[in-house]
Length: 144
Image (tube, rainbow, N blue to C red; front, side, top):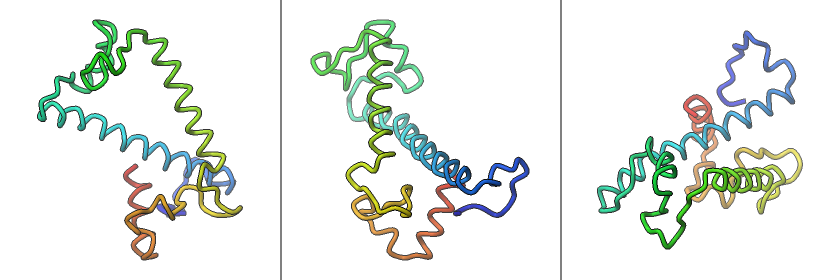
């Protein structure tokens, strides 16, 4: 496995099937974290372009004041209920994760790697060079 150097004092990799599941979970969580970091930076860039958005660490709290206007436009979505947002978030994230786990549009043959499917999800062709691709896998698991 990428990034596995044999050091496992907790014994989490004793069962290879469980270890593979932990590895997949870690990579997926790392990818969501990278998207979250982008979600912190993107509103700041939009504010510099003229939008009037709250800073990322205060954005969620605006629902308790006047509600949230997506992209600063109350005609798009004007969310006022934290329960409604939480419900839709759980439904949408659950549906997208279920879609991913069940193969999605890129169902692969049994035994292929679900984390690095390649094909349409590798538009830059990073997986073509096997040595470079192995290095990128290690960087992703170490930094995700």
